Amino acid sequence: MLSEQATPVVRATLPVVGAAIGDIAELFYRRLFDARPALLSDLFNRGNQANGEQRKALAGSIAAFAGMLLETPDARPDAMLARIANKHASLGITSDQYKIVHRHLFAAMTDVLGAALTDEVTAAWDEVYWLMANALIAIETRLYQEAGAAEGEVWRRMEITERRRETPDVVSFLLRPRDGGPAG
Image (cartoon, rainbow, N blue to C red):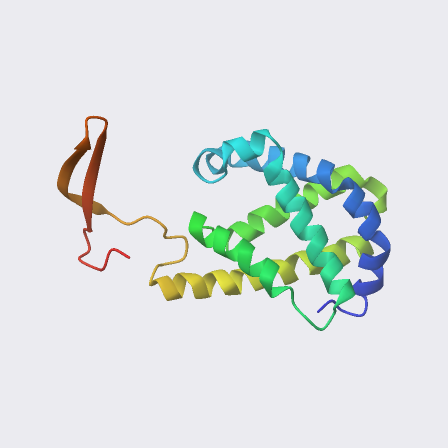
């Protein structure tokens, strides 16, 4: 739930931020990947980066989350958050990465919005960001726990126990977890 101080500021600035969010997202990703190039090669779908889908996803989720906080202040948009959190957990997103995103996102907002990004506006959007981030972190933590995986752990060491030629062009491999745990 947004604070009483942030609500009118977010309501007044959502159209401006929403209109600029594409430019903000583009600058954000450029800065993020300049600072952390491994994220582009190890985490983000390059096709979605190239065609702009990832920028649209970021922009859409933040703007949608802010709009939902304004429209239904007593309800959290759990369905939207669950979709995002499941995607994040499948990719191995960790809670410390939200701080990195915050730093680069707000730097991009400052560059794009300039003087319109007053301390009051920054504080209100900071609140939106951390409400969303903390909700996602909580859901992702639960997802990792339910999977019996450490935060960010999405890969398991496997060993090949059998190799079968299915057709002249297809080979199947039977795998077993090296840790002796169940495969699924």
